[in-house]
Length: 393
Ligand code: SAH
Ligand code: SF4
Image (cartoon, rainbow, N blue to C red; front, side):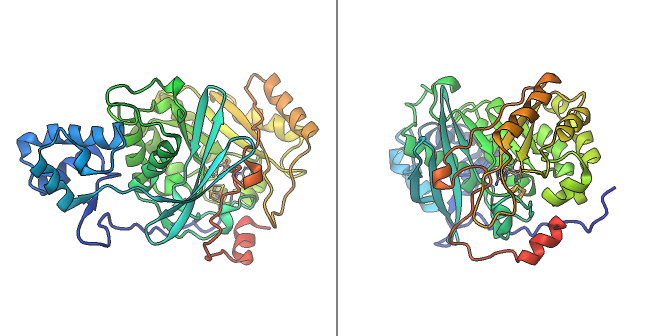
């Protein structure tokens, strides 16, 4: 069993009420919460179901942010909505476009904090990498976000708002009733691989993903949403049951000694405990396979022996191993493994019968690649000592 003190989460949630007046933001409310809010604002219960459907379609199928445009609602009802509610998504402060087409948005949320959202266009699909927290409580020693303290959890509205602002930028709100198929969308996939540990902000992440999957709105299939966790074991079964999306796990090492250093949450839930939870996931969520993410760090976790141990460990779990060449950031204590090493590692895994794609770093020129995200303006830094202690360096 793990030996170290538990890693606590310092969760700060902000109320849904906005600073100006008592208006509630409709973005981020689940269907049930929207129903309650509409009834509280005077919608007769008998009409509530219909009103929820109407408002929902305007918000999530058409991307409308102005009550006046909701023309299938009576004028006085629209006025009532405007008195009680606002429709707000986070603001894009700046956008950087990489040579390879990757777009990085710096996004400002309530309180003046900032997170990053990255859009990655690929052949036949487009993936949006979204953030779930400002900073992170965890201190994975190879991750830039890990050097920044957790400032606060994002609300469901701020999480789904990232999808909506990317759709605005991509000009991808379809005509009502004509949602394109997933395969032809510019934004066809979501990965929760931006800043933060999504399973330490479970409820907001779940609500936001429910909105993304709702068939009458953004309508992305659960198979096109991948949640990446560092290994918050107690929340893994809940993810299967309450979200049902695809799961990726930041595995990164094949012994507890090395994983303790790279992903310090391993001291709380070690490799065996994690694997046990992962074994149950595909059945619980009815999904095909789990993605094991494995960052390639020179002379740390990249030997042939590591590759063989990895294959042994995951035996019996339907899996794909995604090898991520380490993305450097200023002051990072590691180096990327050589291409030859990464290919030799991939080969061993492939020969054992697993897909072992090597992730092409995207948007490196704009610091948008995996693990490079960090708000340039957040001043709350973890001390070097805290990072070293938790990483056992
Ligand atoms: N907190 C979650 C999701 C965000 S990180 C998690 O840890 O899974 C998304 C992925 O990028 C994780 O697999 C993470 O380990 C990896 N990553 C972090 N820093 C990286 C870096 N500098 N280079 C390559 N991958 C990195
Ligand atoms: Fe947090 Fe994930 Fe970075 Fe670890 S890898 S510090 S869990 S964002």
